[in-house]
Image (cartoon, rainbow, N blue to C red; front, top):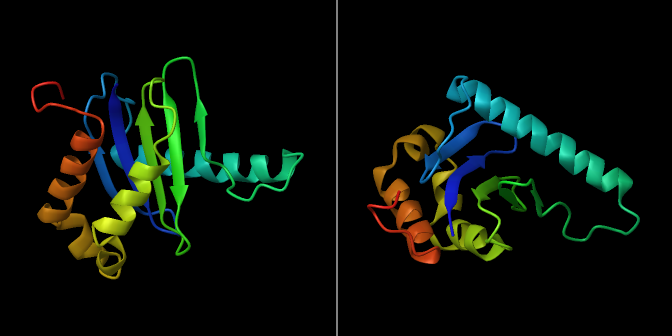
Length: 141
């Protein structure tokens, strides 16, 4: 089970948090450009799914997979968007993403983006949560 990276975006597409655990290939572009591409892709996929789905999508877009990885998506009522990229063995990471949102005091931190971006404690908490949830070891990442 491999976790590659985690993005957290606000409702306007600003990347509030990013961390990598086991990312073997870099995008070859700046992180800012990567964040814009990721958010744009999410926006497009959500729009496509809502228009093309034959059923009323109560939960909306939850994930998609390629032949190499699975992208897990969770959006909060306040518009925060969580994206976790894993290998294909992780079938559902929604509980993990909800856990990060619910139990790491994210809502109180989002009021101050500067504090949020530089908060060492939050970063360590997210890292610990993901490592514990997916049994990652320090040496393996």
